[in-house]
Length: 333
Ligand code: BMX
Ligand code: ZN
Image 1 (cartoon, rainbow, N blue to C red):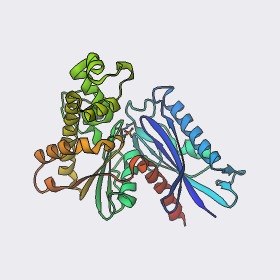
Image 2: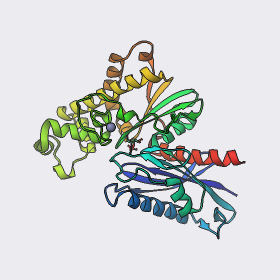
Image 3: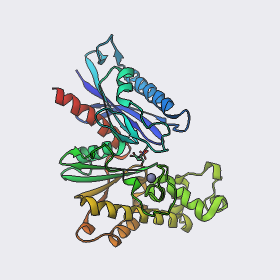
Image 4: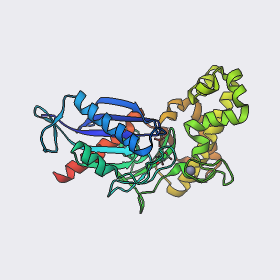
């Protein structure tokens, strides 16, 4: 008899789902694009529910009557855990505020909708909180009691795990570290503020800065891509080929990340800082400038804080979301 929970991840770019067993093994992983700008929040929720059902069906599970368990013979899926972009009320499981990376997500009663659609008890938390929980328990944060995990992808998210528990703040809004202001008169942010770290150091910020510097002609001539098809990946690939203008933008981006991390470290003094999310795939390109900026902008003793690449890769949010669901089942006994 095998026991599972369904783990879900809603990011600005992709939705992911998988089954997690008690030992932390993930299986039946499925993905689909978020298409955040197509149909708004209700459409994203519809796709998430479809992905959930597909994942359960593909693994051979069926919901029998009103049992509140998906069954495959004697195996069962007993709960669902979701990590999503946006600030989440951990009690109601509703989105308190999501920025324009997921339009129409603010106010979405996610726990209630998932419970209705899937017939399973649901827990919901911010995606970066989930990644931090997973890294602290199973990843690069193991053995540390104050772990700050910063996810750098479509957005920049943060999670702080203190003695194994996620710190959520008074209202569920803690660790929105992508919105630390690094230039108060700077670039308008998707959250409505101006000059947020996310506008300088996220994945999309790399492409945006390249365009500010070199325009569409620069994309064609220096990178060799048509502007309509260009992505941050193209800039990264060009930097690796030795295109100096591309490498300079990545260095600039990493510098802002280091600056932002210095502010976080001054507030939190974590034992270790972990960098997760899609941009951690280019760790070798980011790390030297990131570390230099961190050290140049921080005071002793926090200047000595180790900054490391997270260990769980693209599955960190799923592993943490599943962990939330397992924590609920364990509490219930
Ligand atoms: C944004 C914000 C955070 C989130 C972070 C990383 C929204 C929708 N998102 O700053 O809550 O943790 O992005 O999100 O308000 P990702 O989409 O890059 O995974
Ligand atoms: Zn912002």
